[in-house]
Length: 74
Image 1 (spheres, rainbow, N blue to C red):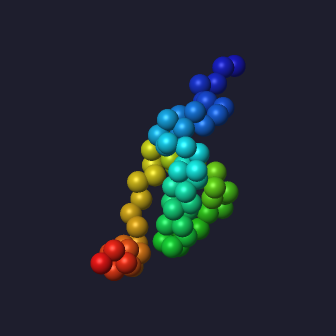
Image 2 (tube, rainbow, N blue to C red):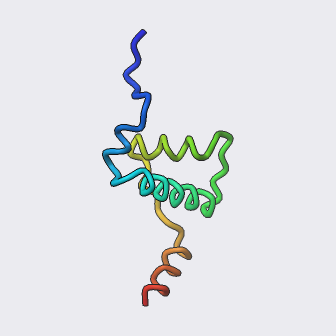
């Protein structure tokens, strides 16, 4: 039986300059999930990496966090 699913993160490496930017991006998504109060029964780190790999990583930030970022920039 042949699987088409890649066994490495090669596809993810093409989207990011280096592994550190990938990790920082994944951390920001995980923080967003926690702030939004989404409960997970599975490993959050694996879920986030799958979301990024599948292109489901475009989540909205909570309004409070966006407003804080605007105040800091001003």
